[in-house]
Amino acid sequence: MIALLGPPPKELINREKEGLGWKFRPEVENSEGKLCGSASEFYGGSFFDLEGNISEGEFMYKNLIPDFFNMEGSVLSLEGKDKEEFLDFVQKMLQWLPEKRKSAKELLEDPWLCPDLM
Image (tube, rainbow, N blue to C red; front, top):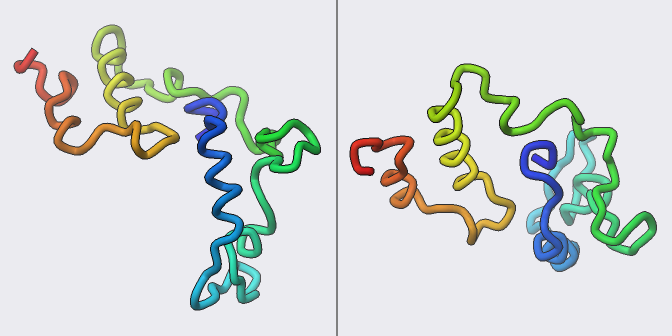
């Protein structure tokens, strides 16, 4: 997602900090068969530098972010205005902060789906 959307906003990273205190009830088994009581245990720690060891809020696994991949380059079957409108439509859905995402109702009225409405 970072390759497509860029780094997440500070606000989202702050939510991760809050979430570190949340507990799973009941505990959940991870891929190694270990019962985990929190997301941090399940995933083996935080994904972001929450303590400022690198740079506070920075993604700690940059080697996992493909540098050759981006939103525009991922759409190969469209060109010109069609591609532009499609990317605009997709970006309304793919937002880091849930409250910034468009609702299904709003998306149904998007020019990409209903060009005759515009």
